[in-house]
Length: 70
Image (cartoon, rainbow, N blue to C red; front, side):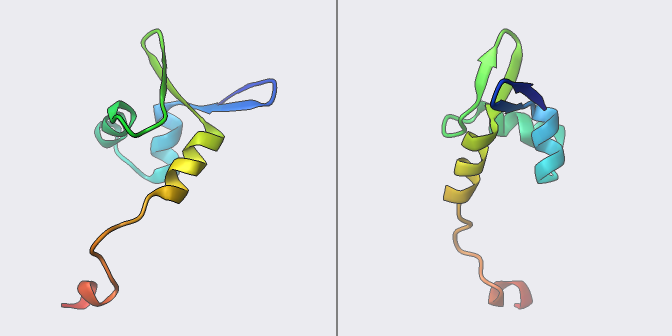
């Protein structure tokens, strides 16, 4: 995590730890079109507020608690 003035940025390594993702899945997330990542040189970054907004808007479709016990 990098802090620049009042801006907090997460690297893919930070996001993988926060979301319990492997390196490959995390990089797929950063490369997806709907994920709000920023590429600076060869490094990917995401602003903390953009990550929070992205996660709050995402929903798992087609899974209920009943599906887990079938």
